[in-house]
Length: 181
Image (tube, rainbow, N blue to C red; front, side, top):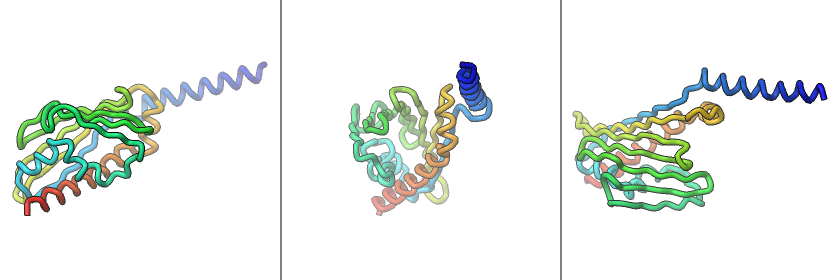
């Protein structure tokens, strides 16, 4: 009985230590940003991002999608109120355009796992000497759950998202530049 008590106290102390260390040493939020310059008309680049159905051409083309994924679209075809939802064995989610400023900025909100994870996403478009600079940014929080923080740290969540965004923006560049010719 005495050894069971010491074992239980040891497990409890370990759990408490992991929780406290994750709250103190691991970030509770994340921010990912990638950018690309596209040699195309700003209206064409903006339209590719502003219509969520277009994302299959560039944003989801490089992902090895879950075979159980079922996607749907709701609301208007483009702009504010356009919604992309998905369901799969690995998780459900919803992404909605909440603000669309033509040829300047698109703001979105992504909600995953029944609201456990909420991200704010933005795309900024600005002309520069080589074309249109597109900046894709996502910010969110891991919340208070220490397991979320540990998993995000161990799996390099920010790094994987950044790499995915980089590949997707390269695809966006290709799609826009090919359609402009």
